[in-house]
Image (cartoon, rainbow, N blue to C red; front, side, top):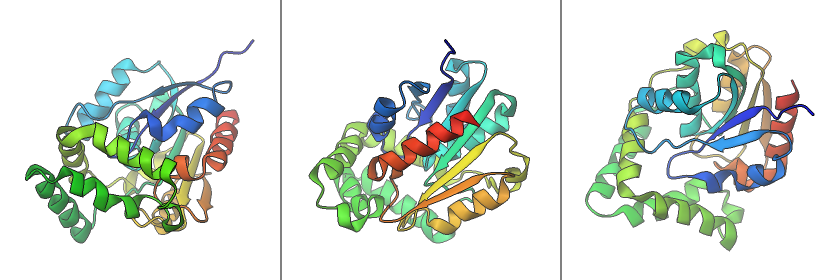
Length: 233
């Protein structure tokens, strides 16, 4: 019996293992999955270095949003250890000045004790508008934000607000790669995914309709199928 390939699942900002609940259930036969904790440091280098110390010698990576930024950092530090790559609802470029300022404003709001306001304000940006009345989905997203807490939110935000530009490294990524995005993603719109897929040799691009920023929760079957296919490449 062949052993299952190790797959590191890295959540996005204000997310935890619940982001990947459908993948953890559906892909148990295809991969030995672990969820990476990105809330312990306030810079991408240390987050990635810590994940590398706990990871197998070689492993696949799936990262959503902030998880994608961490995946790029893993590739900077140890490209030879990454066997397969899934970049989901993420971007290679750093924040625009406007987006950076919005992130700083949210951080200031949280620092002043308005953390609940931050998580509530983010919900319409995270999931497709047709799903805002989906109590289970919205409840999961809100619970992850609430349980993450303000200190973790600020650490995670500091880690990504001045992240490096990953566009120059795209052409050097040699492992099998799938790029997944939502056509209605307001935070990392389709052109972000297109740029990544165009830059990585041989990358597959999947853009999902009626999908916002959280494809693993919004379109779990499509993400499951893409990850299963990726791991066989």
